[in-house]
Amino acid sequence: MKIPARPKVILRHCDAYDKERIRLIVREGLSELGLVPHGRTLVKPNCVASKPQFPYAFTRAEFLEGVVLALQDKASGLKELAVGERCGITVPTRLAFEGADYYPMFKRTGVKHYHFEEEPQVEIPLTHPERLRDYLFTPEPVAKADFFVNCPKFKSHPWTTVTFSLKNYIGIQDDRHRLIDHDHRLDEKIADLQYIVQPELIAIDAIVAGEGRMLTPKPRDLNLVIMGNCQVAIDAVCCRILGLDPKKVDHIRMAHERGFGPVDLASIDVTGDVTLEEAQKRATGFEVGLIRVEKFFEGTNITAYAGPPPEPERTDYCWGGCPGAIEEAIEILRQFDAQCDEKLKRIHVVFGAYDGPIDAKPDER
Image 1: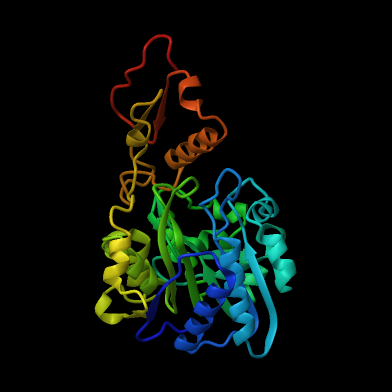
Image 2 (image 1 turned 135 degrees about the horizontal axis):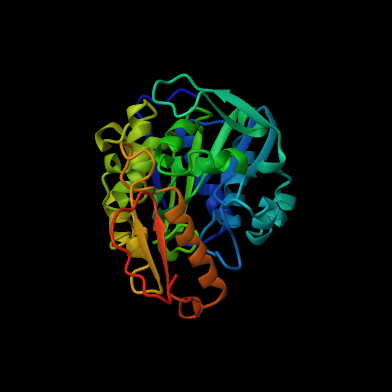
């Protein structure tokens, strides 16, 4: 897909997960953007994890159903309409879809669905000079899509600052390929994934957003449906809603520098029944930001020490690797046991090439 010369981002008010209301909003968005779903149309939600432990981590079924119904309303020459995703690693996508209540929605709407880890993987060659690898792999339904729709959840992310549209592409790979470069090169990996496919439509579930963390976020009512036709542009506007400079969010900056869209508001048309200023008011105090592992475990029985990763010229901290993995592991344990922190014996965990003191007592690990 060619990146629009002047992208558009649409901010619409929606204060309930009413599928018919969302259907109308998205249908009007498709008309305003001049988009007609066709051929193989594929919708990619964010279903990294779902209920009961992770109720605010995923694109809600009602939101997804409203999008699907709008696509059906506006389609012409449709060969297939499907929803596809790979949830967080180690867990079957089938389990995440079940917890998100997606299967009844698939039955009601008649759409096909793909569990990406169960599909054939297609090699996509890369030739741009900044690439991490000479090729990437993606599920066949993604590679064959004629009209790609990205439906992320509006969330903070402690490793990449935010997860909006661009970051949602981590779910277009299966576990084998997803873990490659999911370390201190995570932002670069996200930028590389943009060469696989670009969406015609982005529709972000920001009705109830997630602040703080990405698996276990705190719910925050923003009452917004955010639509657009350019990933970099929509992510830039979402950053501005939170008072962030998109050029300081590495994966957004990298995608912008590689020609995937503008980040300056002067180059983006922002429309809708909610102004950017009003959206910013709704998001006042939204908890966002990178959180190092030492800070995350401060005041608990885990003391963390982090040194630079193997390639310190890229970054002095491994944002997408082991430190974040243990943070999320403890967050998950906390969902199952509220006394998790108290039950843990004091331990000391070292990451990277740490060169400094470790204040461990004789009976501590």
